[in-house]
Length: 81
Image (cartoon, rainbow, N blue to C red; front, side, top):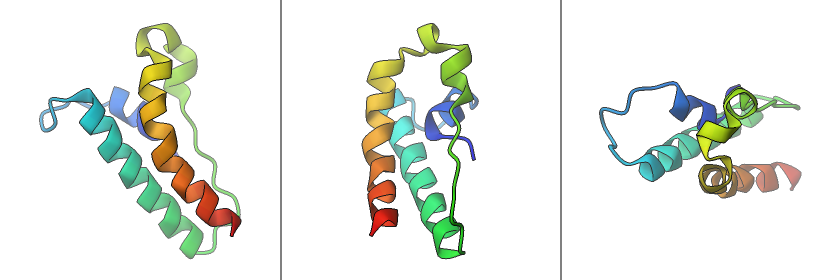
């Protein structure tokens, strides 16, 4: 499934008008989807961020990804237990 960073690069923000708030919201939504997939029995879930590879310089990767990773990491840690 696409990751939250890629999703935020592919939409028009008519709601948040704040990049950090939008990335946080998408990260939380992806986290919930990952939990639902795991609950449905998924053993492996692949999260792709194609935008990072093709647009890394323009994306200001480090600061924006730092917002996504902690919210997604919560799920990854939960799957290990």
